[in-house]
Amino acid sequence: MIRFIIVALFVILFLICSIPLLIIEFIIGKFNMDLKNRSSLAIVNAAFRVCLFFAGTGVTVIGEENVPKDRPVLYIANHRSYFDILITYVRVPRPTGYVAKKEMLRYPLLRNWMKYLHCLFLDRNDIKQGLNTIKEGIDKINSGISICIFPEGTRNKTPDTFLPFHEGSFKMAERSGCPIVPITINNTSAIFEDHLPRIKKAHVVIEYGKPVYMNELPREEKKKIGASMREIIQETYFKNKELV
Image 1 (tube, helix red, strand yellow):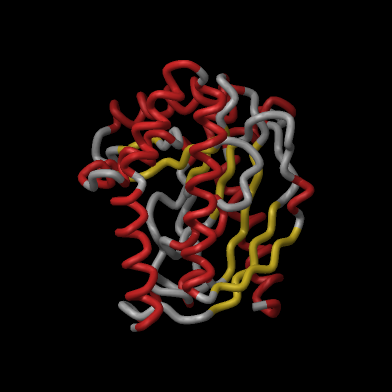
Image 2: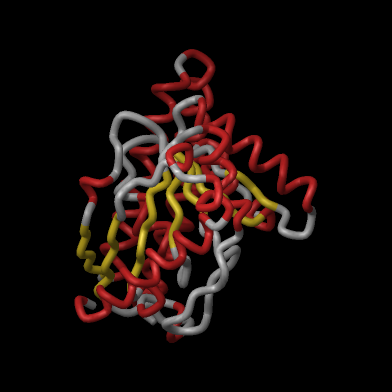
């Protein structure tokens, strides 16, 4: 419980103490949005790294050279833990927004930082609103912001399994022309979800796959891109289990 208390206290203190930073970032954005994007990224990256340090999380990273540095991408990843966000976010080379459930909007200060980081808020029960979220994601990618989405649609609570990947998750890549970078994450649930409410030391393996360009795929392969990406991540997941 000690780790949980320390991490929880740090998050609360960060959110409260960062109120002046939110104001400063707001002012910076009025004059230089690119600077705001980069400074907000650096601030939250630093906070996430502290959380991972307090949680005692060790990380092995494979294939990071596969991530294009000169253009925005659509990251897609399997999802077992809240820590998936921290683990992946501290490694993004450029401003990146995550697709989150709309319920996150109920948390003050946290929602402000999420908006500053270009996160998208999805209502999973409203198809029309979901289409608007996809369009918003396309606009952000076209403006140079990467997007990360968990195409299973929710945290998968069953070990060593994978929920179907929603095909609509890939429309952002298809319509923007950006590359898809698959991310395979092993063992993040061992940090927190496997033994709520305790946080325990754990070793996580994260692997970045080779980028996939949908505009280079045959039409039939585009139709089943979700299943193809799921297969890639699943194979990588079981390959890396022995590294945990």
